[in-house]
Amino acid sequence: VPQHIIFILGIASIFTGATSAWWLLWVYPAWFLFGHIGFAIFIHKYWCHKTFETYPWLARLGAYFGMLCGTGSPVMLKVLHIGFHHPNSDTDLDPHTPKKGFWWSYFLWLNHKWDFKKVWLAKDIMKDPYMKFFHQNYYLIYWGTWLLLALIDWRLAVFTISAATVIEFHLSGIVNTYGHTPHKWSYQNYTDGDDSQNIPWLNWLTLGLGLHNNHHGNSNAMNYGKRWFEFDIGSYIIR
Image (cartoon, rainbow, N blue to C red; front, top):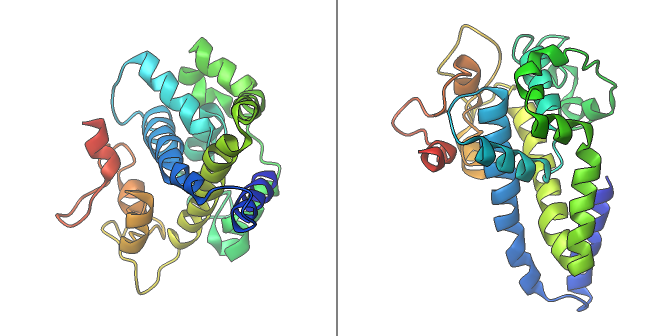
């Protein structure tokens, strides 16, 4: 909520003439770095599912960038994915199942106090002192970086971290909701599991995360693409 307000005020400053519209050019590169490379590639594909190998320093740097889109620490996200979402997909134990309603899967689930005591599921991450530090100081790192950029120029913080956080918030909400709701614009390659869906139009927006059924069908795959017309930009970046 705070970042939505901050970003809206930043947009309003453009309409009032107080800020140049050229600052909007920071928005997409910031989301691509923090949301796609940081979160989708490093936090999700690497730290949560270990679908590829890379240099430790690069994996840590990627995790840091990923935290700047406001999704949480890699430890928390691995527990969420491996401990709750994947093994209980589309059941009452799934934290963000759309079976509890559109708004629940979109964002209301974030207000629920989930029991993340299954930290043992992320013991491989917790062995890394840097990742343990990231987990224990997530909010300090997130807001500290935001404040540092704001001290340089408040617009730099607003049109990078705030913007990326807002965009990733909504993309995650869309994936959680439409990625698990069968509809005429979706399809499945894996039909013996949950309600996860592949959504072509969403795949263009998320650069690969729209192939949600493929991911659930084979969560250890680095490339979410399975058929010739399915693309996963993240897999090409990793290669």
